[in-house]
Image 1 (tube, rainbow, N blue to C red):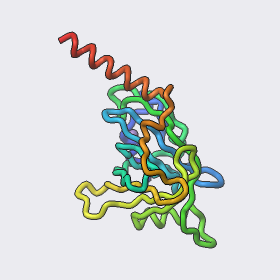
Image 2 (spheres, rainbow, N blue to C red):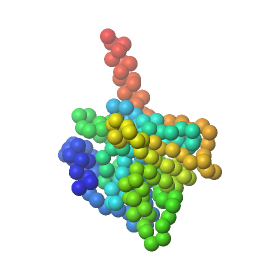
Image 3 (cartoon, rainbow, N blue to C red):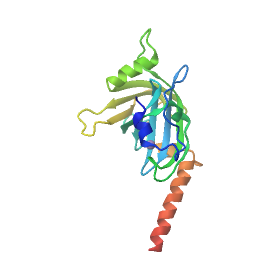
Image 4 (spheres, helix red, strand yellow):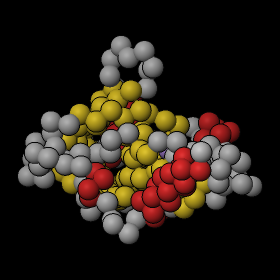
Length: 202
Ligand code: MN
C-alpha cells in the first residue's frame, strides 16, 4: 500500500487535502512542483509513477543552473489527485500552512526502451535510485537528474540536478521566479507581520 503513510499522517475531516487513492493519468506522465509554506518554506517536487506521485521536498527549490545541486528529501508517496491541490492546511495538521502550484507539466525518461512504457522505465530507474528525465513545464524545462546520495545517514537524501542543455542558465532562484501575487507569499508576509507585532508588544 504505497499511500498508507500519506493517509496515516492526515485527518481528512480537518484538512482539505485529497485522501489517498491510486490513479494515474492517461497519456504522458505528469509532474508538479508545489510551493509549500509550512514550518519552513520548501518546494515539493512530485513525479507521477505507478499511479501515485513520488515526492521530494526541495528546501531551496529547483534550479535551472547545472552548478546548483539541490538537496531533495524523499517523502511519502502522495495520491495522483494531489497534483491539483492548492490551499490551506489548518494548524495542528501535518504540513500546516499554505500550498500553491509553482510549476506543472509532463515528463518523460531520457533513455527510452522500445516496448516499455515511460512509467515502467521510470520505476526501474527509481529502483536504481538514479532518475534521468526531461521536464516539459512552464518554468522547468529540459533534462534533469535526481540521484540518491549514497551513505547518507538519514537515508532519504537525494540531489536534483539540471543537465547542461539549451534551457540551462548560470543563475537561477526559484523565489525570484514566483508569481508576485502568490498566495503563499501573502501568507508568509502575514505570518512575519504577526511575529513582528508580537515582538513589539514585549
Ligand atoms: Mn511539503
